[in-house]
Amino acid sequence: MFKKVLIANRGEIALRVLWACKELGLKTVAVYSEPDRESLHVRFADQAVCIGPARSIDSYLNVPAIITAAEITNADAIHPGYGFLAESAYFAEICEACNIKFIGPGPQAIRLMGDKSRAKKAMIKAGVPVLPGSTGVVEDEEAAVRVAKDVGYPVILKASAGGGGRGMRVVKNPADLAQAYRSASAEAAAAFGVPDVYIEKYIERPRHIEIQVMADAKGNVVSLGERECSIQRRHQKLLEEAPSPVVNDKLRRRMGKTAVEAAAAVQYVNAGTIEFLLDHEGNYYFMEMNTRIQVEHGVTELVTGRDLVKEQILVAAGQPMSFSQRDVAIGGHAIECRVNAEDPRTFAPSPGHVRHFYVPGGPGVRVDTFAHEGCTIPPYYDSLVAKVMTHGRDRREAIDRMRRTLEVTVVEGIKTSIPLHLEILRHPEFVKGEVDTHFMERFMAQKKAGTLS
Ligand code: MV4
Image (tube, rainbow, N blue to C red; front, side, top):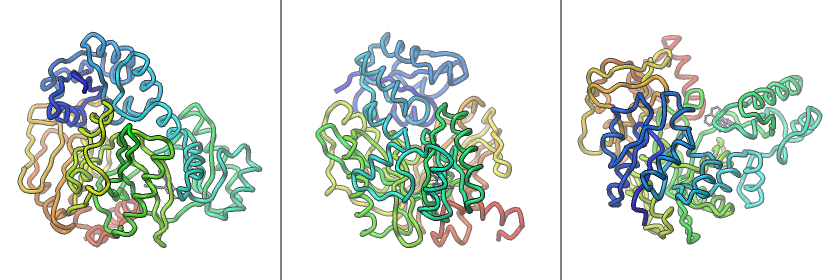
């Protein structure tokens, strides 16, 4: 086992990883940027190293500074959390070369899944269902026209180096294709330095359902059920739940089996998530694989009773997973609200000094946060302040617990998304579980028109 783990992150996930290390009896090293020096992850770690000024590029993305911090503290592993360097194949490689264990999948799996059209090809080879479309990258406009005609409109153009929605274009009729192809490719080139684009059939109002998988170095791969992540705005998730209100045991078993096959096909090790689109006929299609622990992993932990971060550390150290597929059962229902420091109406960031902070605990409530009375939410990083999670015997109980929790939560000094969460939790379509990836667009339109009860 490792003796000392460096946590290459900040905020709530740095604390989440810190708790897992402490439970395993491991020493911890925090790294921090100048404005984060008073942060809780710095205070609670055994050691802490400043890795640079505020801007991420100079601190949390500063590979030489992080590797140096690991070397001078004698850390034998690095947990990257999510964001920053978590999906950098380059960083995973540098760790390997420096004899520091990267707590995550190998660089080859990260690189493969980071190239969305290559990943799709690998999934086709593994027998995983994907949407019809181009086989790999579309070379030019003429090829785009041919493929689109073949699969039928509407189609969607996606940047191969993209993911998370950047560099996408939906094309409803042939007249718009050439222009969309040029602009998607140009946007991809500008954003990622790679102009490659691929095409697939566009699904109207799908659900975003993702399967959590965990794999160890002995070849064991296990699925831990799905998360319903359809409630998003501009590809930022606002609320997630496990299980999905529309996934029954049979579909869960099928999707779980597919996800395990997908991970096994690329010799995947560590925690990962397979994202699927689910259409209205109950068909599901591979979209992307996220090669990291995700923000929303906690709802899966609540319904499975497993600690995914501890498991990540165990399997990175070469140990077998602590459970097998037979041991995985989904119990009750869990919901997560991502409390962001932002204006709930305009979504403008709202960093600043937190004058008051209170979130109640109680049965079925879990709060992952780095916020506390008197803390400062700096403007340089993402706006996530707290993940409020509730667990109940059923969806109704989880929703009721979330409402009561958020109704008495106090965050003063900054604006937060809590008022928006409370409106979503009251929305009749949400309460019925009738959500899809366009829920938030309809919701915002209803709000604007004043037709929201
Ligand atoms: C799609 C799609 C419909 N059809 N692909 C958005 C993020 C990126 N991972 C893929 N995305 C989509 N791909 C096909 N063939 C609709 C979306 C999509 C979406 C997906 C998940 C969650 C929210 C979304 C919002 C808009 C579009």
